[in-house]
Image 1: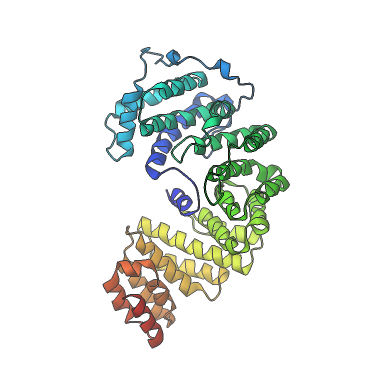
Image 2: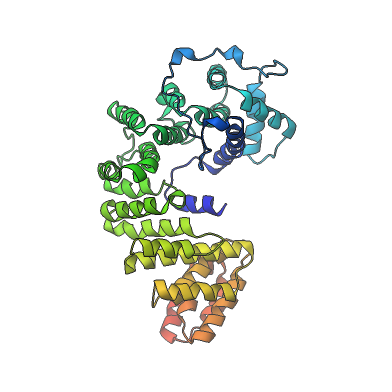
Length: 427
């Protein structure tokens, strides 16, 4: 969950959370099972689907809709009823019929790729609401991509431009899988679609979010196989989209050498005023339950500059404090350990970073409360003899959400000028 939250904070383009959760719930279970049932087809991808490309697909081979039947009962799937159940779950209504849903999952796992195509054709022919159609398509397209990403792209390439709830974002996973097996073929197909206008922007700012998703999908393979080609592709994009493309790559899933390549692209191609944000994103991806050792290793490996270290340190502190706060395990000992690390990475900024991280964690309204954060802040003020942690803490949004308590804390700032300034901000 922490990793999902980190991705949401970055500039990723994904469907609304409700729809995303439905897709993740079903596709994760389906694809794990597919990997077991088809153990000779390749390894399960860490992200959504397995790279099992079939480049010799021809659309005429698609089975007819009547072939979608349960192997045991030969009963047709009631797509209307299923979509109603899924929409109920998506809208917070709970799982009305768990047995029926699990039964469908088992049936889906037995479908061939031709039967999945036939099912999608059958759904397209039904008189369904757009929401109902999209939730059914989302359940089927992921497993289809897992079985044959090339087939999915060739069959549904005209759906690339679908809105944020549509197939486009899932089809980018198909390109990622295809590229891992056949980089040249996947790149040629993608470039042809670009030339044919499939990724032209329809927005006033000229940005194509779906193209950024597909470019990022291709980057997963290019980073390790052809860094020069990766650099050329990103350089060809508008400057204000380069960081977005890179941040759609799961940095934590990259190997050490690919992480170095990633950092190289950031330094070469991301605008100077956005590079700190890119390094902050990297740090957010590397912090985990074991702490910030991975962040340190990365910064040392790429010989990070002082500015890059400070940006990474700020995000590391926020991510670590938030993680421990959500688990209810944030205490003085863990903060002292973090502060020792901050002293090495961002000398002179440890107190201000600590205060901001505590403020961010207290804003989440989870297990870690504003009152608990305040106690820690006051302890540091007393032990350091400095107002820096307290002032930085009160400059955060959580102070405005806990106004009366924040004003009481502000009165404890020893420097009169700083105290008056904070009190003005809290009015």
